[in-house]
Picture 1 (tube, helix red, strand yellow):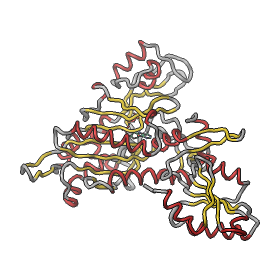
Picture 2 (tube, rainbow, N blue to C red):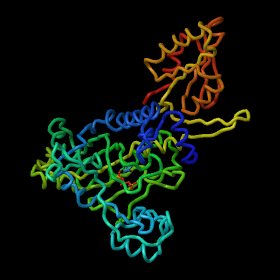
Picture 3 (cartoon, rainbow, N blue to C red):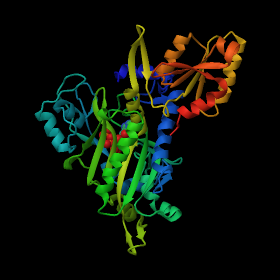
Length: 458
Ligand code: ATP
């Protein structure tokens, strides 16, 4: 683990994450993912899909549109309820979430977000502005987090649409399509990965809270009355998933929402939190959403969203458990957890100890002399052998010590060096292990099999 500043600097220097629109001075809290960042993100998503969809009989995939009929957001309650309590400091004009200000002051996890109560608490606790120190806030206003835009050329009320603030609603409105096309048996789930947008009042902490982010979501439909049992098994499933990505158990904890904190549709919710350098923060949530969404969409659309149970010959509205995880937040937690600094021969070594299947580059190919044609030719030949199977990086732009350090810093598990012994004596190369830093000589002809044995992509 390290501090945020060091991680942001590494992420930029090595091509994981760049500031968005940087050459124009940036656009606040937007981030672009560079070559290694996009690889890491894709791998996280692929591993999620593999574990939660491909290898399960009861799970079905979906990729629904970001733009949806605005009635969806009426039915789901987002138009009315998806708001944060906003206050302005009258002195310096800075804007805050009232609940954040109180949480910081009281060192509490969650404050109920009712406007009247918040107004009273802000005054009674004499909360001051974190920017200027004044204690003069406007009344709390509810601020809807959905981004609004227009479909088509006419910018009027009839054409107003929203960027989705969660992927989940795309799943509910496709319930009948999946049931009719895939014939699942209850309990079953639908999974989706995609972009969501929230006009957050106070984004921050690098990619932890942004206005544009990706979610991996599951709606797992169950018989009413069985939801608690499935709730617990989804917590377990995700704890296992998170630790399989290199996050240590000690840095994860489960926080059960209190009754006052529960959303209007939920009878139980837990967050899985990660111990970020700035404190525990929500990594993902698991919510028991009852039959609220299916019933509301049935009511608003006039289309019945029910499951026919062939054993009892009845139509039922299933209850649903929703695990929901932000891809970028998870990527950030993984980077923190895999970050190590060590001293080796009086020098600092930074290593990202990603699990092998997550590392953006699996094998680095490092010719020891870039001006020696025989070595270069052999290195290129090895690149051709390995690259159809594993992500490979060819690097000849520094001394071997420097190249090793660079690969350690991006978490590459194996470095292959090609030297004079390779081309003059025995056609062997050295393979260096990232974690032990041990080297062994392997015949070029055996190299691909060697890596196939060591690297499991799932
Ligand atoms: P928070 O309390 O942090 O605002 P939330 O409870 O509103 O989060 P959910 O609606 O439960 O979040 O969304 C599910 C997951 O989506 C979160 O656990 C998080 O991983 C991710 N997520 C939500 N909002 C953001 C955001 N603004 N930026 C990045 N990821 C987000």
